[in-house]
Amino acid sequence: MDRAPSTIAWAVLAMSRPSHLLLVAWVYALGVAIAYASGAAYDPRTLVAGLAALLPAAASIHYVNEYADHETDALTTRTPFSGGSGALPRTGLTPKLALSLALGTLLVGVVVTGYLYTEEFLSRPAVGLLALGALLGWAYSLPPVALAWRGLGELDTAVVGGLVLPQYGVAVAAGGLSRTALLATVPFSILVFVNLLAVMWPDREADAEVGKRTLATRLSPRWLRRLYLGGVLATFVALAAFTGGVLPRPVALASYAIVPLLAWGQHVHENGKSTPDGARDGGPRRRPGPRLVPRRGLLPHLLRLF
Image (tube, rainbow, N blue to C red; front, side, top):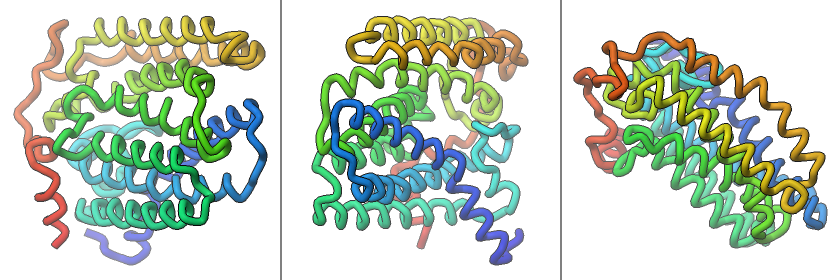
């Protein structure tokens, strides 16, 4: 195990997933853009404040996922979008480091958010959405719910990344929420769910090995393809339904540029390798695994820090 300061510093940075934090900032900016398009006044200080509160919370979600998934990440082959950062298996550092960082960044986020709220940079709806996003983000990985281990992680991520996060941007910029802004992000949230079906696919064997029951391990390739295509269809049905009313026509038309990427995602499912343990349409048979995260309550994990 390499405990050199440079190694630890690299692991701390890698486990925060900088590229994913940039994506978080981009989706936040999407919500801000929706607010401006709806007539919100431009205030750069408020926008910076919203981002300052958001990034520690997002980093805490990434760190806690690194902690919860360290067994899976040690078994899987990483891609740019799956398999975690790979920092823990690569360095041999204890998973407690990730959990400590998760708690530390969450505390920073709480303090920053509280200060910005008292200084009236953040509205009450913005604080509520940020708290909801953090709660669902932690619930994705840790007990007592551990949604990612129960086949609900994809839906959870779609709600957080596709609905809650852009609505947080709207609330920061406009001070409140609107029905139009919420409807405008529905096609995007469905697309996030579809994207997760493709992202989870490379990890299916490692997830099955440790008992993590994502949709990719629960469902057969045939049903995953059907679910993927159904999600794509629902995305464009929602897009067509909201064009001209909720969504400006140029924005809706520009959205069709993602069709090649969706076709690539379908290609992944059509040509993927066999599922774990020679599974058939009934879904893969899970190998006996430790399943440490979902079987424990949250308190034992926190006590591991002491």
